[in-house]
Length: 113
Image (cartoon, rainbow, N blue to C red; front, side):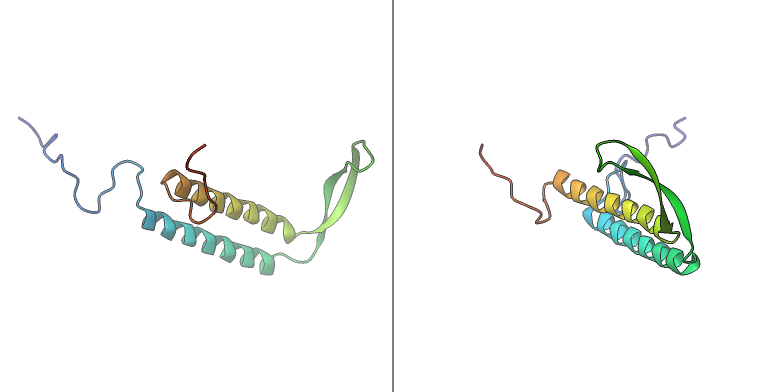
């Protein structure tokens, strides 16, 4: 008795095999991610007050590590974190385009070295 194991070997249209995504699917996810980062940044900006918090800061200008604390607006902290996530997303998309063979107009690579 076979019980349906191995009966369907040809993937159906629209079915993905493993983690392979089409280019248009990755582009859609990229724009959705950047839009959500922008929405979260706007929510953080309008939700958090303009209060200032003490953030540890290390001043290396004198050749030694001096622990200094600086006042920073509270609403800037999540914006910096979300900006880091957005930068990581942009770099990951660019790297994926390079891996797929098209650099997306980011530069030229010499053919013969």
